[in-house]
Length: 86
Image 1 (tube, rainbow, N blue to C red):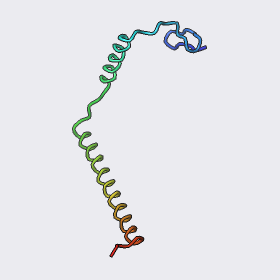
Image 2 (image 1 turned 90 degrees about the horizontal axis):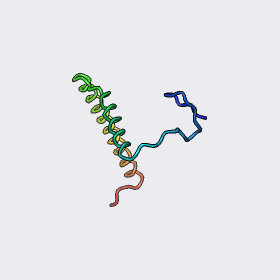
Image 3 (image 1 turned 30 degrees about the vertical axis):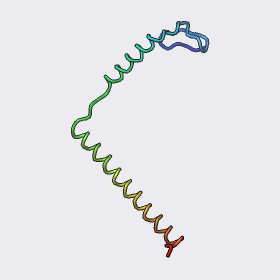
Image 4 (image 1 turned 180 degrees about the vertical axis):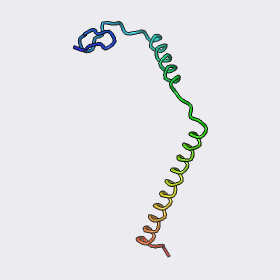
């Protein structure tokens, strides 16, 4: 038995006693929920946006350096191990 928190009713698992809404009603419900969620979105201030942008750019630069360094080391190791054909 599952208790419905909104109505305080008890029903068997998998049955709610209510009819499932039609296809178009579900689409309307979906768009209403999307609009309700979009109203909760908070736009960052200019200083927050600048700070977030700098953090992302810094992370990208660090990751580029890491990948470049690993590429350099692996190519050096491959050259040492396999040698350069003469």
